[in-house]
Length: 221
Length: 401
Image (cartoon, rainbow over all chains, first blue to last red; front, side, top):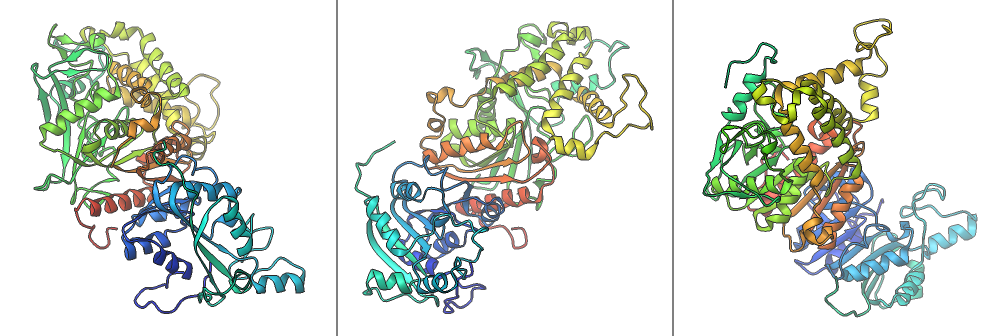
C-alpha cells in the first residue's frame, strides 16, 4: 500500500505508515501482540522497537514470511480465515488486523476470532465511504481506484470492502465495544475525534478501531 | 575378528572399525547407569559417538545440538571417515555459516541404533561377546533422544541454546522440545512430521523386506558369516532415495536420457540415467551403512507418534513450553509434506507457543533441506540471530546477518 508519509520521523529510511503509528500509540508497552496479515513485518518491527512488545505475525505470502523470519520476527505462514481457530482464548493482549479484513473470506468470523484471541482487537481498513470514493463511483460509474484501493476490480484481493458505518455495525453485531475509533484523511492527518461518525465516514480515507470483545469467562482450553 | 573371507566387499573392515572404534570421540555409559528403553528393557553399557565444532562459552549457553536424519551420522561438518566426502551439512554448519561455529558450540551425535560408533545392532553384546544382531532391543526416537540427553549431561551442559534437525532429525527435535522443556531454548524442526504416516511406514516396510529377503542377511547374523546383504540393502536405499526427491527434480536431472549409450539395448542393463544413478546410490550406501541399523532405525521412525504420550492430542506434547520454535517445510517435499508441518504449527499455536513457520519454495523434494537453498539459509540465520539476542548471546557481526 502506498500510504502518504507523515514526514515527521527523522533518521529512518522510510517513515512508518500513519495507521501503524497510531496502533503503536494504542498498544501498551511490553504487551503480547499478534499481527494477522503482517506483510513484511513493518508494524511488528515498529511495535518491537517502540513498545518492546512480544510480537507474533501471521502472513499468507510465503516470500513475505521468509523476509520476516530473516529479519528476526516470529511469523508463521498462514491464513486469517483458516489458521486463527487454533489459538486459545485471550492468548494475546492485542490481536491486530491491519488493512487486511477487507481481503478475508469471512470478515465476521475473523473479527470474532480476533476478539477471542486478544484481550483487545485493533482493526484498520480502507473506508469505502470516503467522499472521493463516493464521487468517483457517482461520476464515472466505475469502481474507484486510489492509493488505498489500487487494483482493478478483477485483480483486487479485496473481497469485502466496507465503510466506517458498516464496520461500526459489524462491531455491534459481534458485541464488541469500540474503545477508540480514529479516521485519517487523504493526507494522513487524523480527523478531529469530536466529529460525528457520518463526518468521519465522509472524510476518512482509512480508519483504525480499538475494540474489546464481549466479556467472557476466563480459563478456557 | 577373523580374517575377511575373499567374497567380502572391500569396505567392510573399515566400516566395522567405525562401529567399534570410531574416528570421533565417544561417551561411554557404564553398566551401572542403564538406559531404560521404551520397550521396558535396560540397555547397558552403551556408547554415544559424537563430534563437536566451535567452543563452549564459559556460561555454557551457546551449545547447539544437531540431530541427524535416517542414514546420516555425527560428521555434520567434517569429512566422513569412510567415504571422505565433506560433512553432510557442510553448507549450513561452519565458521560464518548460518549455524556459525565461530559463535556456537555445535554438537552432533550418532543416534542410538546407528553404526558409526554409537551402540547399535552391529555393536558387541556384552552377554555374548558377539554383535547383537537381532538381539538388539527395538528402540524408539524417544530412546535416541534420552541417550542424547545423557551425552549433553556428560558434556556438562544444562540448557541447549538450540536443537536443530531435518527429517528424522526434526522428529528428534520435537521429542527434545516435548521431553526436556527447560533444556531447549530454541527448536528448529525441518521437513518433518509429528508422527509417521501410513505411507511413510509403507515405504519403510518395502525397504526392510528387501533387506530381509537377501539370503546374505542370514536372520541378522551376517556379521559372523562375514557377509553383507548388500543387494537387499541397496534396493532398500534405491526405493527410499526416490522418496527424497521430487518428480520435477528427477525430470530436470535425468529426463528420459540414456546412460553412456545412444540406443536402448533391449536388455535389463541400466539404459536410463536415472537407473544408473539409483544403482550408484544403492551400491555406495552399502559401503557405509549397516543393514541391521537400517532395519532398527526405520522401525524407530515407524513407531514415532508424538501424540502417544500426550493423551492423543499433539498440543499436549508442548503444553507449558517456553521454547522458541522455527518450523520449516519445502513445497515439493512429498515425504513429509507442508501440511504435516502445519499440524505441528497448529498444535504449538494452541498452547500459545512462540512459533515461526516458513514454507520454502523448492522443487528439490525432501532432500532440499540438505542442499544449498538461499532462502532456507537466510531463514535459519535470521531465526538463530533473533534467538541469540534473546538468550543474551549478542547479535551477529555486521555483514553476517
